Length: 160
Image (tube, rainbow, N blue to C red; front, side):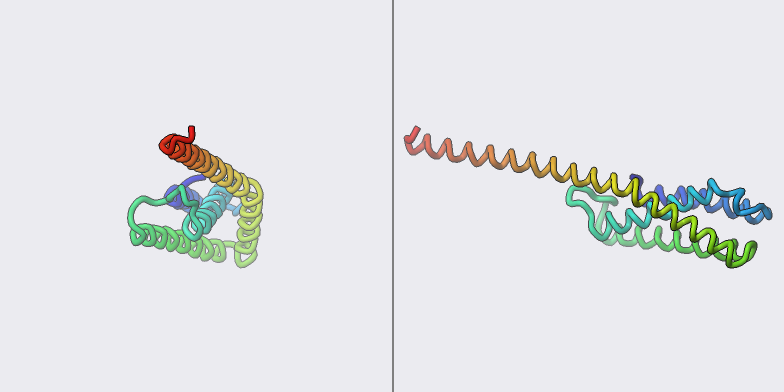
């Protein structure tokens, strides 16, 4: 899984390639690779925003710094993604009509569903495994400390 800033960078690169291809008058099918990259970056960004910002794992922090810095960074990146999407919608609607935009939205939905089913599920499983391992280690350490405490307490009282 990548961070939100990398997602925006990937989306920007793919967006520029799509814009150049469509502006040159080539067909939407000619930029399928860039559309796929753009869709992946948009999907990754929305997943990261939903997963890391609204409900982050307790052991992981996406951004370093204060809450205000994090909020401003996410807001700025989100607005940049929204403006790219709006500009792409206008560009595709201008060249191909509403059916071209509908085709792009359909492709994007397909990519998002596939990535959610495959990649995001694996990431959630990995987070659950990490949470289990960290919890088990903390439980073992606290149990060991508790046993040591009772041992030394009993030894101090002369019971063993």
